[in-house]
Length: 257
Ligand code: PHE
Ligand code: CO
Image 1 (cartoon, rainbow, N blue to C red):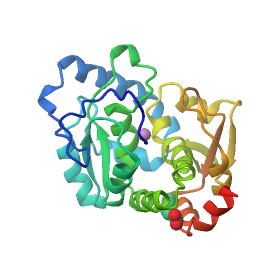
Image 2: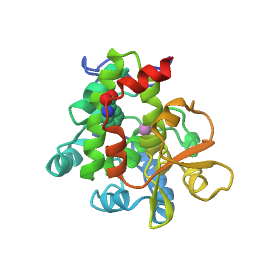
Image 3: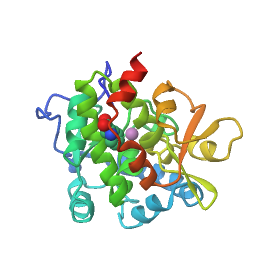
Image 4: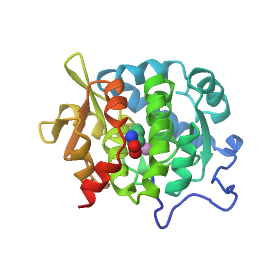
């Protein structure tokens, strides 16, 4: 999320809403093979570490063999929760991002990382966006929550509060953990798509795992270039929905002062 200098995608052909054609035919056999290897590695980890909602959804996607065609997945998704995928060249500006989410469109990056980035990549690529984010859009509560987040993002822009709302996204949508039958599972896309941090976030004794705490999240700066020091654990997507439902305006005022 957010606009970052030196973005590596090709923005030349993007529409004003930053959408592009996926141009599926342009992916090379090597790219499909690399995607397949990424998918295989994560598939060994997710049964133990992913939340049940994610596991249930990925099985219906038939997306293990090659980079998926977004239009096919969008059809399934639209029928289930009314969301669709919109292909984008890479990261998009905040207002564009929030507007897509507020219209139940999830931006997915079209390009795939290079082989040397197998273990680690700074910007989101198609593997992160698809494998990490898309399955949970099939969950009705998560889907509604992300829609509310998008609307909340447009509001945060008007209130000059995006910095705080972005931290919420980071500690939930990207790096969130969930308690499931007294075990910790991952639902954050940054974890689900990571070869190392997925197991680390759940098993390592090093990081803090705190119960979801909206104000604390908004006060917590985050690290973009190494494993997180703190994770926040929700009980359910219903809880996430409820805790984020109140008007954030007073909270933003409190954080500002
Ligand atoms: N309740 C938030 C507000 O008033 C909007 C929001 C909902 C933000 C869900 C994030 C997630 O700004
Ligand atoms: Co992401």
